[in-house]
Image (cartoon, rainbow, N blue to C red; front, side, top):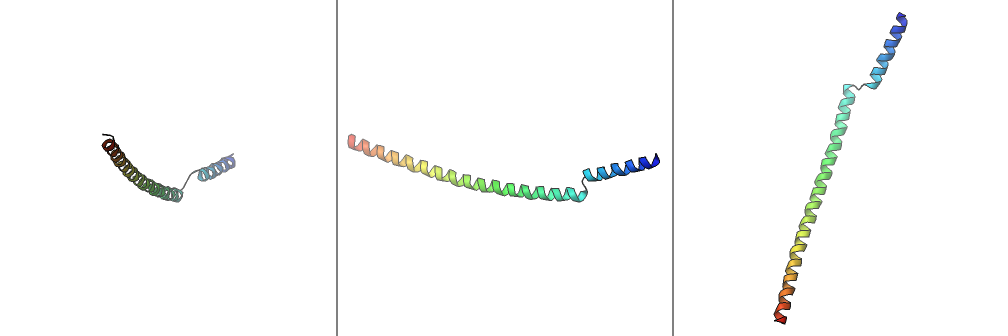
Length: 81
């Protein structure tokens, strides 16, 4: 009976060590996660830069189109009146 208990204890210890992580495993995982978050932050910065460029181009188009429409309107009004 004592041999069975010792054998069962060894089996449980092996299962526990297989299922649980060591400090090295956790540190490795943290490093991988930090690297992935760094990549995500870089991607967000790239997207933010692209959005800023698109926004400024859109504002330039709006201003140029409004000037063109106002110019056409005044030109038509001058000839009609």
